[in-house]
Image 1: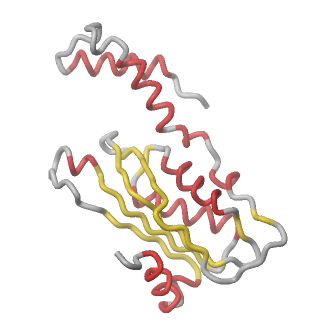
Image 2: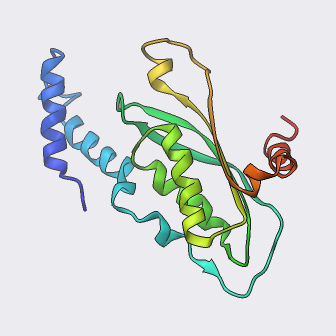
Length: 188
C-alpha cells in the first residue's frame, strides 16, 4: 500500500502552523511535500513481506557460522517519530539451507523501514530467518543511537543501545554464542 502523501503533507502543514510557523513562506513552501516524500521512502517497509526476501539457495551446503557484520540501518522510533541509526550483525548456522548474503542485508533494511522499536526490530530479523530457512541457530545484535535520546529528553549524544536475540544452538550452546560474539566484536 502506498502512503497517502497528501494526508502527510496536510499533517505537516498543521504541525508547522501549530509551532507558529507560516507554511507558505519561501523556505517552508515545499516542506510538506518533501516530508511526505521522505516518509514514503523511510517507511516503505510497512508493505513488504520480509519472508519473501529470504529465498533459500538450492544445492549449496554449509554448516558453520555465516555472519554479516556492520549492516547499516536507519529506522524511525515509533514513540517520537525520530530516527535511530546504527548497525546490525546477523549470524546463523544453516541446517541444509542458506540464503544469499545480500538477502540478509535486505531483510534488515526492509524491517528497518517501518516505525520500529530497536528491541522489536532485533527480534523480527531473527524470527524471519528462522521462519524462512529453519537454521540450527540465529543470533542478531543491533547497536544504534537514538535521536530521541540525543536531541531531547536525556540529551546524551553518543549513547549506543545494544539489543540481541539468540535462537537455537546460539542459545543452547554458550561456546557457540561466544564464538559468534567474538566474531562480531573482534578488534574493536
